[in-house]
Length: 278
Image (cartoon, rainbow, N blue to C red; front, side, top):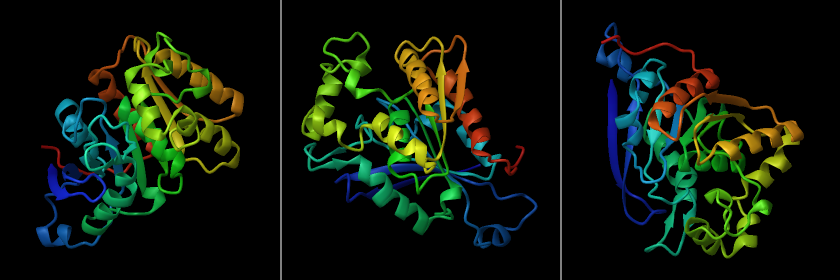
């Protein structure tokens, strides 16, 4: 298997960044010259970590490296701190994670690595906070991604947020949400920005321009499951077709995400076979 850790100075994040990239195997039936000089551009998955994580999470806690090489897929895994994959201009010297992915990391990868920039060859997925980032990137940049897999996360109706709601996602006074609203310039500014994924989906669903969408959740996920069910019902109301992956008994946990990413790769239609057996 082939894995790369790349360090560079980021313009958008104002510091050195580390990115982990999984690259396809050289088949043992080919010479190095035949494989490495073939000029091929591979399909790519942009894979996002959750809260408290970094660019190593998926490699350390799942079998994503094996799943990717089996399908000749490039996987790019950035670090995002606990940024919600949002722009935070007031943090340190500026930490614009939302812009970083599309305006810096994607051009870098397309220019320096054997990766296709065609929409039909690009996919995005993430867990928890990374799922929140995934759906945000997918609906705000539908021209960039063929499909997206949102794992253990779901859009919420911001108009239903109330102070003190026991569900932290809908609690307008939780520290995390208060920080997000303040960063955007207040709750109304937050609702009118790229963060209001629920509203953007409502507007784009009838147009047929959204990427294909998958949503996954375990039934014992106390953080997300009720919001997941509410969003699934809303999708029925607005006529948005999506792929729903639900597993009984699983919580907000890596055992579930290892299963869900395999389902996502199948949902993306990545049927090419590659990788060495040992």
